[in-house]
Amino acid sequence: LAGAHVVIVGRGLTIGRPLANLMTLKHGPDAAVTVVHTGVADIGRFTRTADVIVAAAGAPGMITADMVKQGAAVVAAGVSFVDGKVVSDVADEVAEVAGLVSPRIGGVGPMTRAMLLANIVSIAEHALDHGAGPGR
Image 1 (cartoon, one colour):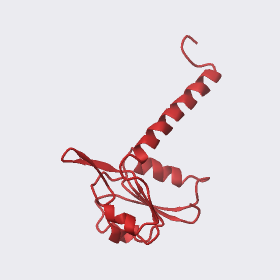
Image 2 (image 1 turned 90 degrees about the horizontal axis):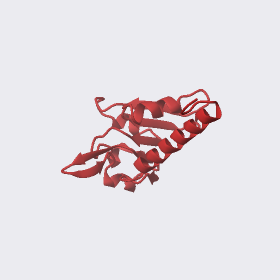
Image 3 (image 1 turned 30 degrees about the horizontal axis):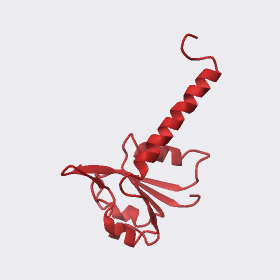
Image 4 (image 1 turned 45 degrees about the vertical axis):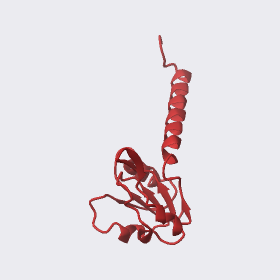
């Protein structure tokens, strides 16, 4: 991602804000990171210049083909429920323009849970290695 323009749409505590923080760390990916929230008018003026778009707003179909630069990578992290169905932040037609689109439903969520569990195990192992734990 070095030198890439990454636009994160959504500033929530679950995805948007933590991802922006990780991407702007001193020893991070050296990308130019823009965080845009849903209250901003014409979000497309930011996303149209992005090499990578992370849609994490929880707004159904808000990222449309006209908002995506040809060949950009689009990560569909946000979902909503509409009429009892899970709906992605990324509209179907985005695949016609983007170079890469993550699975819109069931792609990022399972990976997030897997990484969360891996981190919990890592923290528990670290705590046990350093004398913490039950009965200590």
